[in-house]
Length: 335
Image 1 (tube, rainbow, N blue to C red):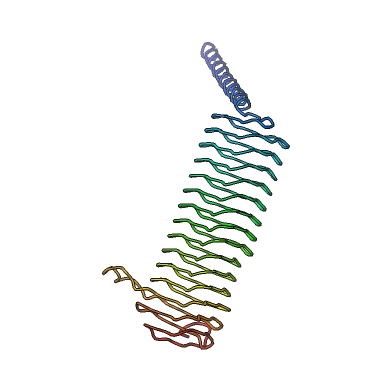
Image 2: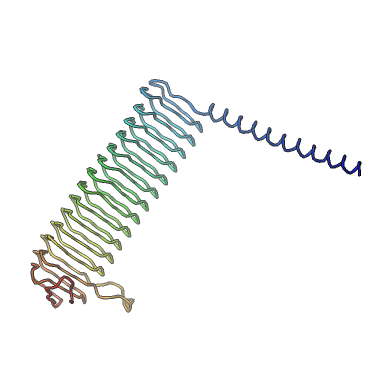
């Protein structure tokens, strides 16, 4: 019995020593990692061009650094810091409040600008571009990354993404157009887009926005509320919903529904194109067109395929070709 107790005691002591060694090893590893991480962050000097490799780079407040070039390291500009061009491969770039930089380019990293920061053109392949309130930039270009901006953002150029979505808050000013493939577009109250908005499968939502050019999608829906569009709206299978808005051009669709409600003015006409499904139309429904009271379509309504056309008695439309008008005077068409 005594021998068994002694053996158990020695075994417990050995287990304790092993656990202690593991804890010490883990602590030493963490300390070494912290030292390496600290040593890997370079601080840019005033006017210095930095070739960082895989190291992180920091520009302190009040410092005006030169060009920064790196591979996998991140770049941080403190509040009020300034640098020239920044070019990294897989690293991310962060500009603090009121910081400034020239053009910024990264492949897989994100680009983030805090309140009031300013930069030139921003390019990210698979990374996101995130802009806080009152940021000013040049053109924005991504492949699969999205572009998300706050209120009062100013973009001096175009926005181009492939699959990334584009979203801005209120009072955004974009001097060029917005072009996406599968990404959706949403721009907030009081904003302006100086060019066209063009998507493939992405939807477009504009609340209180002025668009100088056209709005063009393939399968994406288009929704306007209190907006102004300077040219045509064109969708393939996407629906068009317009409320209290003005369209200087015409409306075009192939299989999308169209609804106009409130104080709507379409200076051009409305065309529903012939479907090109070549025998695969068996399950396709006829588009439904509803024009509510107060809406005005000044140009002709041309239908190259079967549609269901409802027009309120207090709505104004041009000539109709290819469809029979169903008049209604209730809130809901067909009631």
